[in-house]
Picture (spheres, rainbow over the protein chains, first blue to last red):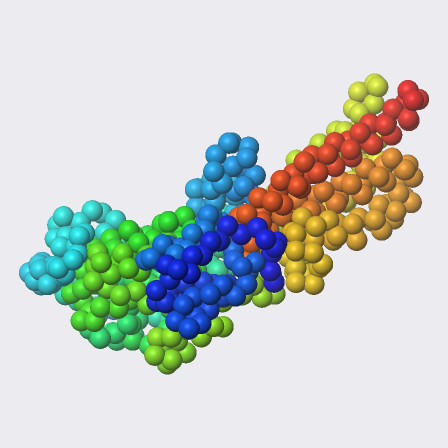
Length: 98
Length: 396
């Protein structure tokens, strides 16, 4: 299953890639693949913006606006005028997004 | 349980000295300097739980040995955690645990202190001798905790130092579940502790195969799937909160339909209100149950659209059916169809929080479109009902 097309904030700069393969290893959506000792993006629309690749890229080749894709969090963020924050575990018990 | 001598301070100190890895920053915490939360788990249980079989003495103190098999209470806990807010408190003390008969060469598996995450891991580690390092994720699973940062680099470094892992194992590798990579920066862990992070498979069930493949996860092992069984297991997470709000919605519906020029009349409220009580229930069912179950076969990528489809499929026949036994007003039919569609669509959109493939940008885009439509739909529904009322009262 894939979600909406052409919305991901994933950005990849192949020139900075050293071919370590970390991004391939950490991506849970198989967005990256190694070709000729460099990472390439296979299908950008599969990205769920979790941020694992960007965090673990030691060469700043990847950037993504990472956050949990949770409607309850986004709506709450809109209502309170803050950034969307996943509500699970805040002991409120009101939002159960995981 | 074996009788084990209490924590040997002399041994502990000795081990404490050996943990001073050159690059470590937060290491070398002497036992008496540790804060309360860094106590070994063995000291935090008043009564031995069924999943602990023994306690062994290591150079860093007492470490509980866990069994891999689940007891009835573990199974019951899993069910309760899925059903309600019990999951917010379903935790185990963080720290180091042992499984099987681990030694200095055994693997270290990192987990969250949400008991269900931990239970699934220990079940899959049956027959393996290893160490389990449990991070303090405030009773949240690995995936969500990594997103929030509680399953993260700092906490991992803190637990590696606090449990004196470097004094217990001779190797310098730890296996972190792949979904933890959202919060754990492998290179930083290496710099701060000397331990190399190996990202394991997404699912604990693949760990055995992962080890067999010499610590390599296949493409399939690296993918977070969202199978039918997983979706079904997560349904109560969305369904139960919606059902809890149902009585309040029901009261509002009955008050609205009971409204007469002479006050609120209970008889009218029931005669015209019951189809809407049924529609509200049906909308919860289509949005929070049918849509998640049929997620992969309902057309469109947008969750709000998926919920709209299921809402309409259930809503149109239901509205026509109930109107045969209630008030056959066109305005009420229109109000009913719009109402169930909005409810179903809204709840389907909420399910984005439970999936493993919906990113924030997509959710934001959907909400930007859907939220004004939801508000407009509910307003339209209310206007239809008001027009119907005014019509009956003979005002228009």
